[in-house]
Image (cartoon, rainbow, N blue to C red):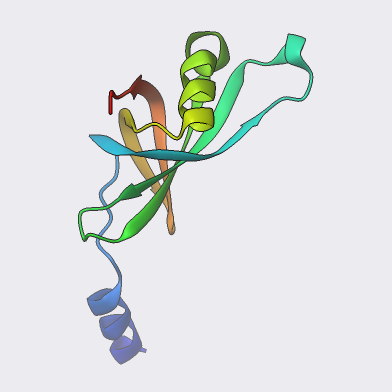
Length: 106
């Protein structure tokens, strides 16, 4: 078992958690409550290039009232955005908590 643990630790990616990060990319997917009157959050999936020059998907829940117009504009036009916030890793998935989204000019 020690050998298995050694090999697993050697090849397991190092996780960066609970750090402030910014990602630049395009919004790939939008989810929200189907009932417009009860929407509190809009959840997005951002496709970006990670530190290792590979494609990475980041998800975030953003305040609907504050960010929906920016999210919708960026998604429909394919514009580049900057997503900043507290980065959390859950296995292979990256989450940004307390996210802030900015639309970038092309």
